[in-house]
Amino acid sequence: MFNRLRNRFLIVNMVIISFIMILAFSTIYTITYQNNRKTMNEDLIKISEFYRKQDGPVGGKYGGGNHGRGDMMLPEGSIKAGPPPERSVSFALTTDNEWTITKTDSRFDMDSEFYDLAIKAASNGDSNRGEFNLDGNRWAYDVQQTMNGYSVVFLDVTNQHQFLMTLLYTFLAVGCIMLIVIYFTSRYFANRSIAPVKEAFDKQQRFIADASHELRTPLAVINTNADVLLSNNDDLIRNQEKWLHHIKSETERMRTLTSDLLYLTQMDDARDNVIFAPFDLSEAVESVILTLEAVIFEKDIALSYDISPELSINGNVEQMKQVTLILLDNAIKYTNTKGSIDLTLRKHGSEVMLTVTNSGEGISPEHLHKIFDRFYRADASRSRKNGGYGLGLAIAKAIVEQHKGKIHAKSVPGETTSFYVQLPAERH
Image 1: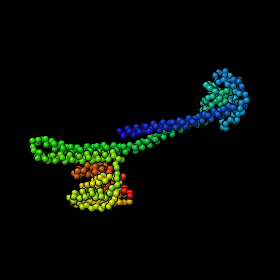
Image 2: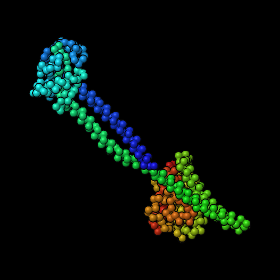
Image 3: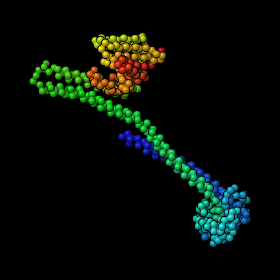
Image 4: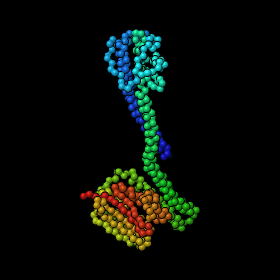
């Protein structure tokens, strides 16, 4: 699916860029071609006037010739012609009405066969001006009809023609190279662009698979216990109480799981619509500690905390209580017997830092950066035994990020694990 998406992106990108390149190159080539043709025509006119001025005014009607060239009269006393363009190769031929050469005017030595081929090419043209190839060169000609035949001027335009061809080949070569470069560049950025989408899709797939797996276990337990009850339908409810407790326990587990999933979904959907207000974070954290003191005492865990008074932030007090509860509950679950939990809440510059540290087995480095992912558990068997689904830290991260804060963890395997929550302090 993602390969098809990437290929579509590449095709669309290549088509658009190719169209733009063709349009740009065509425009440049057309403008250059038109300017080149204009220069060649101006040079040809200048050359023609130069040669014909040397012979004096040419009179007579245009027309009546064998090629139907336009009827027009060459004016008496044509405009004085300047010298021909420097480095130009040109010559003039005068013919009778049958296109037989009667006079040659050239600054270069050329054999009669060359002149015959040149005049033949000019006589076969469809208009008074044109071009032809002869002996590897490109020639432009200008034909004027005289009273006794035709006056034909030839100009070598090989350099101009080669310039246009070189420009065309250059555009083709540059275009091909650019398309190759653009292809690999587009492929690279297409992969970069698709990577977050693919990652999100993979996470969603894992999320669905993990949620289905977590729901399958309690459903299987409920189904098994229900079958046991049905197989003993004549027995008293008092004697079947154990199976009912199992069903209720698994139902509670499913309720907790679905509530957490719904909470995460609601947070994703309402990320920008939550109304925050200033509140005393110190008081909120202390209230959570008081509710858990009995549980901590019962598990024979030493608890110490250091809370700076009157630390205020802008946010939702109930959500921040939930973050504190998740971190403390996580610490209680994974603290070793006769271990310790330390909680601190202090202000550091413009931020408030909440730190929860517990002794215990710790988290190995390869798991540390994944523990905030949904359903991720470094020790799946132990987490399930403790009743965890791997959603608590994901919820804590979502809440902290919603408060424009950061959460991360550090751990020394076999010793301690610490969670750090950084939140922007309320400005007074």
